Image (tube, rainbow, N blue to C red; front, top):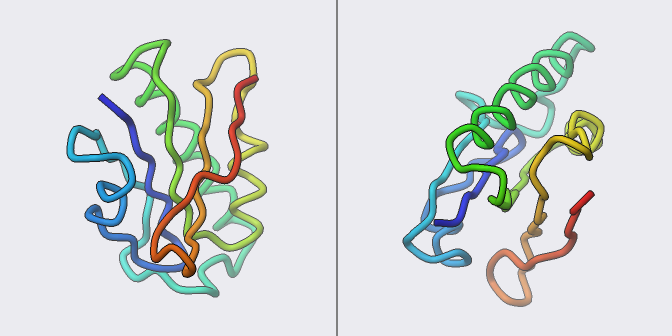
Length: 117
């Protein structure tokens, strides 16, 4: 089973958009806000809270899906939070990340970056 991580802080991402890329046999985990918007990171404490939740989510995904899983990341994030996704990941301990990006020319997400170590 594939694992998708929906990071929706700047905009809403629906599960059907992720399933269109990975198929129906996917476990979707989410880190989102009640009302996603572009100016969501207003204080340094907001970014600290995001990092804390993301760190816990990486651990829970690994515990639930095992050491051989790959986390397919679908981001809708402010730049500051996107940078922290890479900073919070521990290369020796965390699962590989496959990052997807929305591309209007194909009307959906496309793979853009693989982080394996």
